[in-house]
Length: 608
Image (cartoon, rainbow, N blue to C red; front, side, top):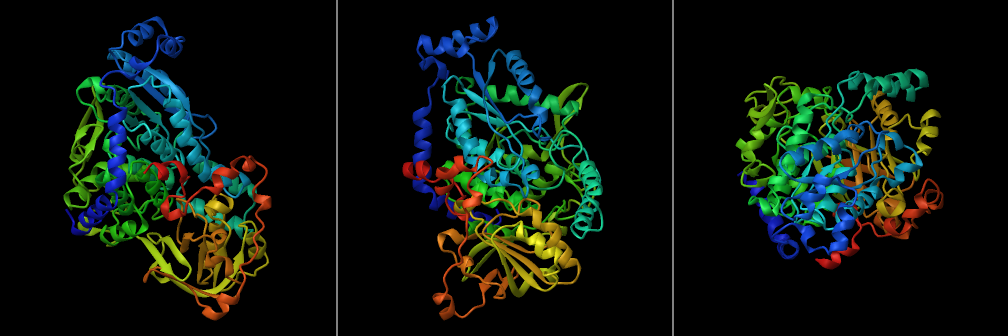
């Protein structure tokens, strides 16, 4: 093992010792050594299979075969989740082929940041992760199930499903992806049209046409944002089948993998002799593997919160120092938009997950000695699935990249580190992703332009008041303030300023999304303004330094003056009512800091 990867892993294991032991003890207590429905009364059980067909009723009544719960994030508005509409029937039939039963245990909400970006609904986005976790637990709470299949792809959905699943960590579970849509117009072209629209050079019709050609069919968006980062993380953690992440929804191979996932989870149940509960598969080593793969591909900054929150649900304590140390040691092996011009389909065609895992594994950057849904050892994930004469098989993946501009080897890495940095200074702690930021833009020292609502930037941009070197400070965007919405709406304007030759950066206690690109963005700043963070005292014209090279973030104002300053008033009342936001007040008030996962702290922390 690489010395840094091993040292970080050892530190996480030591830090998590007490909480992990309590978690594993809870799993042991929840084991039944038989089918779970056997503990139900006759009335309970009759309710549980009342709507089943005669064959399934017979199986469930005799208490010998597994019953698999399906938790689905299906809706037919979101392209990534629309394919899940017919999955339950496919999964049920596959389970029936080997004598087991599957039932839809419940549904979870799935919202899209692409639809809500810049809208009031975006302020429910991060909060939805906790709702999804709770909904997953509710769906599994009937104790009818011996395993589960989790159907989700995007942003908060996968982390929410994983957190909820880990609360039933004594059950084996597999994630079942839906795959990305096929490639549309090039991402670079889409970005250019967005900037032209921000500058008033093209109208809304041209912008809508470009967006429609980019997001054009069923499947995940093809850029390397949070959704595809989720899929990559799950596969490297061994929580879904090898090579299953990036097969397009309408491919015959996709359906074959879905059927195999259903059969495989049945093989992992307590009565199978190969019992592999998800709470044991997710351990300190698999979590580090997920972080390493994220860093090696320039993945979404959102995962710096989601991995922390999901790990904590399994009694594992991870922090940003771990991410930063690993990032310094892990080379960047992929260039996928916004870190390059290619999309996720190009990544898959160039060698994809099998090549990536092979490179990282043989360089000692991934732990091989982990359990996965396919058994012991990560080396199985250097293979990729194929349909040969209608049969699903796995073959060895490529040993060389088929497109070295998209995917490369450890020996010829695009850069020696993962491009994710921890920033520290008098402003607190923040993260910055620089894998897409040119070296000449990684240090910005400039006067602050302070706003407390992302929508206020548009007027300043159109008035020409931003045609200067500046650090745009967006405060009052933290978890407790307004649910920490993404601020990706700012990207075209900031990118335009940078293209004009101005030195520009973003500083915020909010999020910038999985599409963080060429503009340096110091995000997830903690403490947030609402928690008396120094960001709340920044005034227009104050000199701010964002230095991604040195890992520093400073407000360059005399300390005596800062002590005398009052924090600026942020009126959050308009952001706490309407579009359902008023329903989430109690949840929002209990969210922790971004570095601790921006999660609802009470129950899990009390238990551990």
